Length: 467
Ligand SMILES: *Cc1c(COP(=O)(O)O)cnc(C)c1O
Image (cartoon, rainbow, N blue to C red; front, top):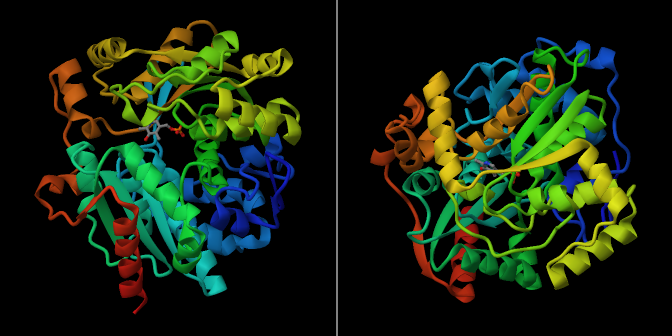
C-alpha cells in the first residue's frame, strides 16, 4: 500500500515509511493511496474472532507486504495480551439500543493504549529489520505520554523522552509515567507549562543537526499507524451487534479527531455505519463546525475532560481531504488559512457532506457532572468525564431509531477520582494491577524551561543507552 499526503507534495512507498515518518514532508498527513474494501462476507467471516485476530485481519490491507502477516498477527497478540479484560474492548449495555465499548483496559487505562501498544512493537520490528534506532520525543499533559512510555518501555530499538509540565499533571497521570522502570525511558519534568513542553519538543525537531544525530521520531496522534490500529474495535463492536447485516451508530468523545476518524475509516472500508456523533466539552470547535459551518479557533479552556481540551484537531485535515474529494490544493489552502486567520474556509457542499454523516454534541462541566451522576443512578455504571460525553450524546439520539448506538468509553473512571467523587460521592478503585501505583517509586529529572538543558540531557541519555 502506497501512501499520499493530504497536501499533495509528498508520498511514502509503504506503511513502514509512514510509521517512521509521522508527518509528511510537505506538512500534510499521510493517507492510503486507495481505500481497501471489505465485503459483507469478509466481515461476517470475522464474527466471533478473538480481538487480536480480528485486528490483524482488519489492518492487513493497510500494512500490505511492509510487515509479513504472521508477524502482524504475533504483534497484535502480544499487544493485547496484557489488557485487563479478556475481550480487550468489551461492550456493556446501558439501555435499549445503547451500548458503551470500553477501550480503557490497557496498561494506562485510556484508549490510547489500543493503538500505542501495537505502535511500540511495530516500531521495534521495522527498526530491527532496518538496523536502526530512534529517540522518540514528546510532550504530554497526561494520557499520550503515559501510553507512549508503556508502549516503548524495554523496546530494543527505541529510546523515549517525555516532557511533562512539573507539578501540572494529575497525580495518577504523572505516576503512570514516572513509575515505569526501564533503561530506555526518560521523564523530564519541565519548570513550565504544557505549551512550554510542546515548544521545547518543536524546537528539538527544528534543530536539524540534533534531529539527525538523535534520530528523533514521534508517536503523536497524526501518525497514520495509530489511526489504522483504531479501526478494528469499530469493526468488532459492529459485528457483535449484528453488523454488517445491520447498521450501527458510533458516538465518540473527541479531541484531536483521531478516534472518530478511525470510525469514519471503518465505514469507508465497507462497514455499515449510519451516523457518527462527535462529542465535545466546552472546547467545541468541531460541534460548531457541524452546527453552523463555523470552524473558528477560540482560546483553549480547561475542562473536566482534559484530553479533549483542544482547538486544533489535527486529524480533521484527513476528513477535510476526503470531503473535498481528495483535492490536495484545496486542503493545503484551507489549512494555511486556518493557521494564519484562525478560521477554516469550508465550502457549503463539503460541509453538507460532513453533516450527512456527522453530528456534533457538547457538554459543559456542570452538565458533565450531572450526566455522570444520572447515569450512575440509573444503571450503576461509572463513566469518566470523557466517556460520559459520548454516552450522553448517544442517549440524546436513542429512541429516534432502532439502530444500536455505541458510545466509546475512552478512559477508566479511576483516572479522574476528583470529578467522579464530585459527581457521585464514589472514588472508583484502580484495577488490581495498578492498585499499588501510589506506593511505587518515581523516576524523573526536573529541568528548567531551557532548550540547551533539555537537549544535553537527551543526548547524554541516548549515549548512555547506546553504550
Ligand atoms: C486522547 C483522548 C480523547 C480524544 O481522542 P482523539 O483521538 O484525540 O479525538 C478522548 N478521551 C480520552 C480519555 C483521551 O485520552
